[in-house]
Picture 1 (cartoon, one colour):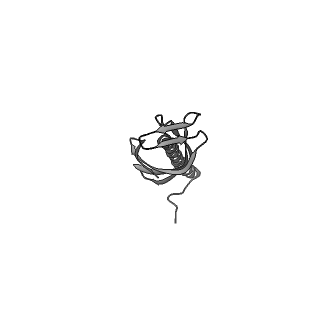
Picture 2 (cartoon, one colour):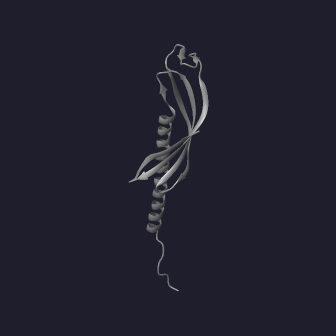
Picture 3 (cartoon, helix red, strand yellow):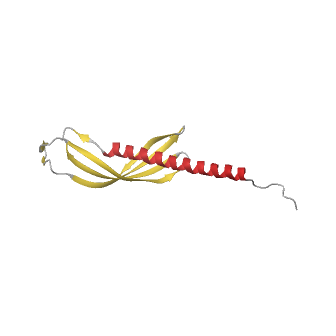
Amino acid sequence: MEKIFSFNKFFLFFCAVFILEWIALQVVGYMRLTSMAKVDGERILAWQWPYKQIRSVVEIHDTKILKRDANDATVKVLAKQSIQPITGGPIVTTTPDTVLLFPPQTKTNTQCTATLTYYRTNSQWFLGKVECQ
């Protein structure tokens, strides 16, 4: 029986390059989405309240892609949030109900997570929904 078609080294090289290129594009897309989630998570979880003279400082620990499709992705951002005074001195806040003394050394550290849902339009990822816990 005669061989009609046989794989030569150029065809195998082309297939290997094609597969490596596809893997590289997947890795780059994953890295792009996780870096966007880190930036968006920091923007969402870090805030300032000038009236009360307190702020939130965030340290992002990890980002995980929970689900990724062609048009949407869900990313979980794990962070440590610390609430601290804006200025160096003690802060006294008075409201009609309470008086709050917030010394400058006082910090509250909590672990927090944010689940971010991104939607894709014209090869661009847009933040669509945020769920904080």
